[in-house]
Length: 479
Image 1 (cartoon, rainbow, N blue to C red):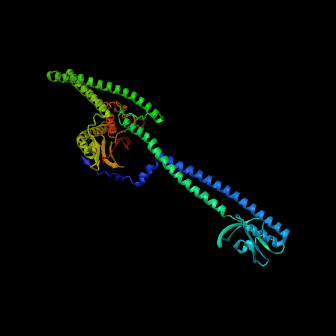
Image 2 (image 1 turned 60 degrees about the vertical axis):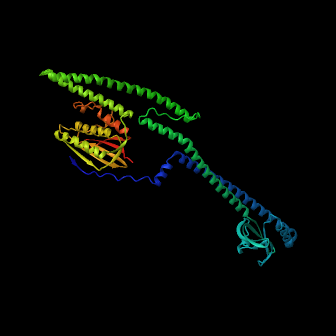
Image 3 (image 1 turned 45 degrees about the vertical axis):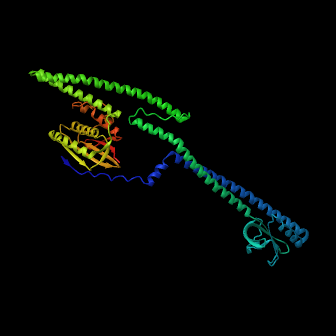
């Protein structure tokens, strides 16, 4: 037996924190919570910005109107009584609780009256009708306090200049109130999103996980599994009741079909065994020659073939029902492959072919050693039987390696292969392609392999070996 090293993939790294986070963000609960948070935060931001903008615009218009009213009133006082009356009116206005900004300077720029301690030099230079913002220092309780105001200046005919304004601190405080409200609302949105995630993950997704777990058990062959019914009468309960009724009916039908199949195989196997034994006894006790002996020998061969067929049917039924899986122990598939290769190497050489093993072991999976060995035996036997091309014995290769944390067993030949349209049928019972009709067999070998692979929670795939066919079995590695 020739052996060659097979370079397997590096073992997959254990899932880290980033993998766990990605898995978390793939859940519906997290996605719905994030969507809720983004939508309501955007809505709250839009609402706060819109309300702040409108409120600021209204307050600004009111400030402009108040400044214009003060300017008109002071101008009227000046027309009625001159500068002294204007200063008296200005003094009265500065004593009000809601007093604005008032400042009067003479033609030389010296302050005459007002409630402003300090102004920038340019404040009185702009004599337009539109108020403009300035920084100023205002006297409050004997202290100089820096503020921002909208002001408007106008000149009198005697050279005096008057500045009238309104502090915009109220407007800025209103903006601060809205910003603070937005922060509170955003925090509330985060809390509500967290509560939504908790509710969905604890209540809704828990029920969905129960449905998924029951479905997995049913797919694995446990038709007795049923979905939980809480009695709440919600849509999950209605779904569970409907699916349970469907599973009950499917279980009855499957049980009937399996029972009939098992009964037929079992009941026919016994008389076939008796028939075979009697033919063997007749052959041993008789000195018949010629056609009679040939007929008895043909009867023995046909009986053996039929008994093997019924044995395969019963084995497939037991594997699919899980009854053949008596223990789940660590099994070194590299060692099993070596034993199968050692068993079939003389067979391949007698037929003029070759059998090569390429394994990187040991490589343990959890399962039943006998079933895994039987599946691998069937794969090799199938490759030797159907891998012939133009009466040339095939070159069969068994490869055992590790890919993405799974044990991968690949059995390939260099024969004619299988058309792509027929590759999905080769694992069905009694499937024999036209090219295989002349070779012995019942079409149950690959069906048994597929049942064993499913029982071990693995997968089997058909690949093009170029030339030939490759059957690839992937099994989870034992922890």
